[in-house]
Structures are given as C-alpha cells and as structure tokens.
Length: 330
Image 1: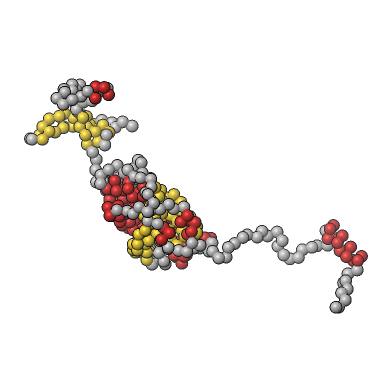
Image 2: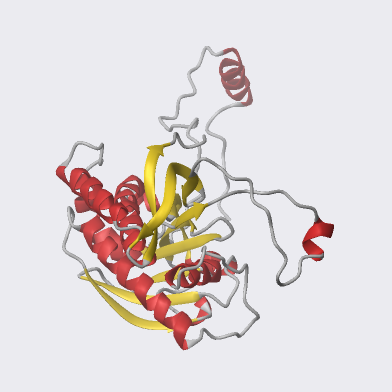
C-alpha cells in the first residue's frame, strides 16, 4: 500500500483552521449553500407546469350563466347554481370522497383528448324531477346502496345533461368549438375510469339548489392531460366576463324572456276567518260558516297580496274585476 503524506504540516493546518474561524480566510466555495430544497414528485405532473385554474374559473362563470337559464326554461323554476371551487387533484383522491349511488356520466368533449365525467348528486335529480312535474323541488339526501335510477329518473338526468351540454358548449365557445357526446352512465364512479388513480384531474364543483329543501353538487371532471395541450388557449383567449361584453347582454335578454314565461298561481280570497282546533274538529257537512263581509275580495299572486277586486260574473263564468293595486308586503 502506498504511503500517504500530508500536504500541509500540523502548524499550517492549525493556521488554516484559525483563519477560517476568525474570517481572515474566505470560505466561499462558489456554491449557493443558502438555497432551500423543495420536494418534487417527478412521477406526477404539477399544475404549475401548464393549466391555469383561473382560466377554468372564467369558463365556469360562463357555464353557470347558461346552465341557470337552461334549467329555468326546462324546470320552470329559478335554480341557484354557484361555483364552489376548482381543484387539481389525483383521480383516486377525488373518488374517495364520493358516496354512490350517483348519476355518473362519462362524456367526450371533442376535440379535447380522452374522456371527461359529470357527476350529479341524487338530491339534485329528485328535486329536478319534482319541479318538472309541477312540484316545489323536494329532494332526498341519499339513496340506498346499489339502488338504480328508474326510467323516469333517467329521463330527467338526460334532460339535465342536454342542458349541461348546451351550456358547456356556450362556455367554451370563446376558446374553441366543443362537441359534447354522452358515452355511458354509471351509479358508481369507480367504474367510470376516465384516468388512472395517480393521474391528475381538474374538478369543477357547482353548488346547486333547486327548491327550499334540496341542495347538492354537480361536478365536471376533466383529465389534466386533456387540458394541458391547450394551455396557451386557456391563458390567452378567455374573457373576464365583466358585464360589458355582448354575450352578457344576450344572456340577460334571454333570461328576462324566459322569466316572463314562468307560471304564477293566482288566488282570489273573499274573506278570512279565525277558528280554533276544537271548532274545526266539530265541523260537519251542511254546517254554515259565517264570513266577515269585506269591501273587496283580495287577489294573491304566489301568496303575495297584489290587488283588491270586485266579485261578479261574466257570462257563465265568475269573474273578479281589479279595483286597485296593493304594495306587496316586504
């Protein structure tokens, strides 16, 4: 073995150590020793590498406007649909938070790559069904595990998907012309494999209310890989929708037109009386109820007093002639 010799003597080593300690000898190696290391998983794409979530937010704002209008025309009720959030996450993590049965729709958005997914919670479906048949939008919180949707429920899902497709196409129009295609339906999102569990997806969640007792979420899920190739379009061609562009004015006009076709319930009340539960229980056929004679009958629209009226007849029909209008109660 070759004998090793020190290049510096013990006295020189002591002097070097003392110089480093008191600063008389610079110890700069040329390396940035103050830099912080950041952990990065190279097996997954990072959202900062491409897709602008803010751009997706702008698309969602346009979508919400059109979707509200479409549901109003179909269901004859004014829905509340708002953007809850936009998140980029692993597909497996998204699936963990879902509780089937759900209305899971696999869709194709040409010319985007791959397949996307629309998930609608049962409460929204049943509230829409109730509204569609003239109800007040009553929904349910959940369904028994494994319970399939009936043909009638599937029909209302198809109607909602048609509205969603039209709204999505309008929302994407400033960026590109989308062609929406329904591929299949499931009740368990595990069977709608639009991506691998470790692949990233962009989840747009919309909080929806269709009636006083029904609320739930509608999710539109894009594979991250389908949006990344168009990241330059997403950065450059999405308008802010500040209320001054032509599309906003068209939407406002269409909304007003659709609202004018909404149905209202009119009631004419001759008189109001008060009674007790005991008196009510004792009422029988042929009993006479004495009314307080009012100067006018009262016309209510959707339970709001609007007019005073005289009661009479017009040919073979009873009729009410408006005498004066009332200021609605606030």
